[in-house]
Image (cartoon, rainbow, N blue to C red):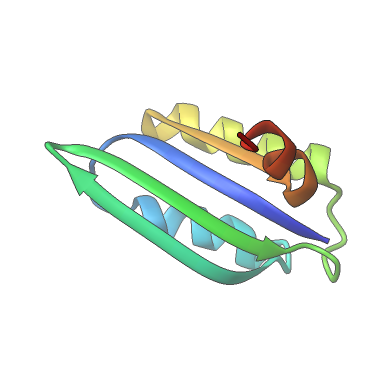
Length: 89
């Protein structure tokens, strides 16, 4: 199962490392990553594979959300199909 992880917030050192660490610790493989910084605001989208993970999507979402609050960014993880439906114009 693929999922889309989005991160938005003020730029700071270590955002990618912190998110990647959580994913790696839970055996979630990052397939693609795109990030940019505009006028001090950080924006990142990751495509990841969660099939080999022992953590379910709800628990991963909770863990990422908590880390986001800790580092003052908004982190969301959505099943790829849900993300596509929500962003289909």
